[in-house]
Image (cartoon, rainbow, N blue to C red; front, top):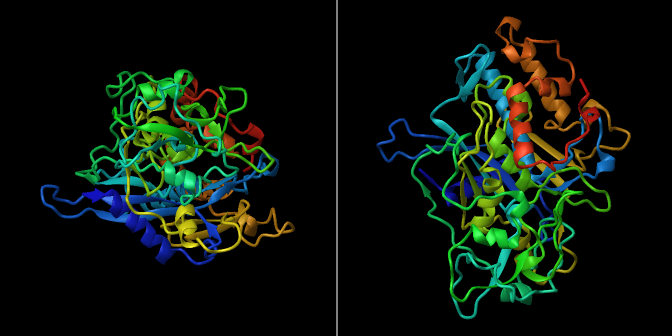
Length: 497
């Protein structure tokens, strides 16, 4: 029905054609990351070889997030502008528009009427695939570096971390930016190249959508995983295929830091530097952030859905991703599976409709041309430092103002004097998405509201989120059983109306 390369190529073309020059990296001086959500419609007759219809419905670029001191209680700043998060918030904007089409305008939409009053569900012929040009920061980016002598590149060995005599490299220090891997042309990286083989790229159909491990059943045959014992050796015990001749010399580092007060990285040289499976926060430049890593957020989406608490009021079931595709970059299938699925696979007793999804995870052979490694390769003789692009671009498949370019959490060009005005709000900020939600609600007759919005008078963003009881129960269960150290913003940051 589709391949990983087809999804990657579609997203790269969309980036080139639909996104303006504004907000894109400066040629040969800057790099960025790309993420997107792709809607796929199954052919009406699945017995035929008709191709599926593929459409990018949201896209995001970005590499930055703000420090704790810059957070605002008014909800008008983007705390996290990493590409994956921008793409997901842009997707929520798309979902809001699709609900408006279904509930108010009675036009063609991705949603059909559910069985309960005021609730909608995704059409059965549709599913969504998430694309990212790079592995998400945090746990999924802790990838072993293998050294081979005159050998083809192979998958990671099951025993790669068990050998106490593994060589260490003191030359690979944790980068300041979570994405800054070693220069791909440096002697160290050439000597320790990691090119992992990936599974078959053809997907026969989208039937994996909404398949889950179930609330009371054991997941796929594998060793039991818990955060507490997911050390480097623990990871090796549940991953990989044994190799002969594989020698792990180090691991790719993530700049994301362990959650304060919890388990920590050893900091030892070489492959034992990181402890895997832990929750992490994105790094800040001297100002600690409250933004969890993209690996952690994507693992959460795989249990709670991508729609968030607000939209859950209108939905009969969560909106899950069926697959995640990663562009060409340092990659480990085992690390991705562990980070996005494995850490939650034993979560039990989730509310009806929620479950840990059997997410398809694949890698494309196609590289994003404005990724750090691609730009670095092109500017071999260029002077000056290669830096991440300071801007973030949001695009949603909506008819009005689909584009949004921000820097430091505000629309690009916002002055200090302008902060606080309506013009200084990103269209995907909390307050603007909340405003869109309220507009949708006010357009629906009250007797057609879902029950969750009829039980009490709600005013603040926090009150509306808390009233999504099934979602909140699922989130509470996930935290207790898998993500207890998760950093949550204080309630006073959600009291805006």
